[in-house]
Image 1 (cartoon, rainbow, N blue to C red):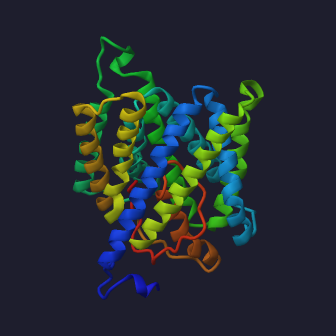
Image 2: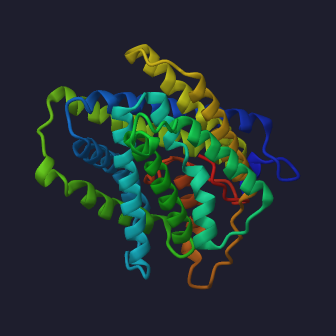
Length: 346
């Protein structure tokens, strides 16, 4: 038990909540900065190259952690779940990066944050988690915000919704699928094994399009790709550290600072306005996501005698997947507090 982080009664110390919030905000600043890099380098390189470069640099940065902690026995009884997690995670990254390149930056960042709205629906259907009245209210509020952001207008687009915005929204759905899959994997799989298979399968998937979409990057593009990988990894470190200092249910609201930073970057570099519709949609999606995270709890899974390693890694893997809206690799240097709840906050 990490007693230094708690006071009697199971509450976190106020200073830890403050530092946790600061780390979350710092992480979201890093992710918004990553979005700037994606927007700029996407003018030169195709989406497939950007996704592959991000994964390659991320793998290089996380490799020391993987080597230090070890993969352990890579034999798994659930290869299908590992495949689903990797396919959903990489597909979400393709959607997210494409939306960043084509949409106003704040809007793209917000569509990425719709994942917490879809997580309860997937968890209800797949993991048979219980449904509360508050959860349905939360989902209704969140989807109202999504409708505001999508701005349906039959006179402009087929079905009244921009195809690019639909792709960004699909990224949120796929990210939710990946997060729920990790939640399911953590019942029997240790963290190192989950990381290994995501790196192996995800890297292979992102490399396939290069056979027909390869474009040699310029030195400037390589620097941008390096900056994207570093910003994403630093952001994940900051978010994971923040979630180690305070519960995700208390920190969820600060995850929406990425929209604020995205709006600032969009206005500064591309003259993108922060519209009233976007602000209202942000408030509704944030409110829905926060209510959903407080109303949907995961039942505690009692470890079997043969799953001690998986149980020990369960809190780490679940916290790690909640630390970044697109499925990522766990990072070193994060001390995880005792597991009291698993939320679907961003």
